Length: 144
Image (cartoon, rainbow, N blue to C red; front, side, top):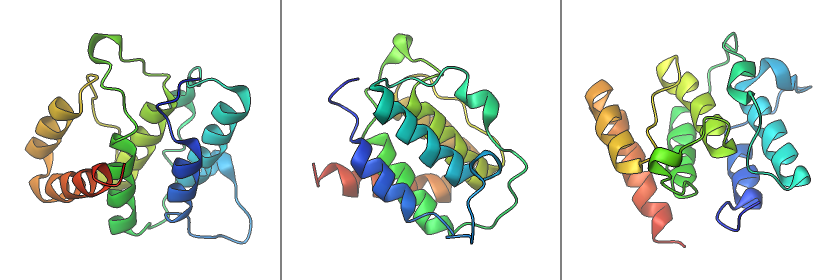
């Protein structure tokens, strides 16, 4: 496990996106799935969840608060190491970001190991949401 990922901060921040259902069904809930995998990565002292993307619950139809999801993506991008060619789809940061993209865009977006490239590409899809993600990214960057 690296010192780059703030697991406690991620778990706390994703909790703000949670709808607090009477009982959490992690395997059917995008936010619950993320929480579960963040805890697994933390407990196993490993930043990677093998084939985690394959388990994303695309059938989750709950309506999450968009502003909270956008703010969490901004926070999450500050956890990314900008791996470029060494980007790994099994990275827990990639897994969580992909789940949040399903909430915002209906499907995971391509990530090429660079926040700059990611935000440029995302801007081509939805400029308004991308500007809000960028503002959140900058806001959380100054808190470090």
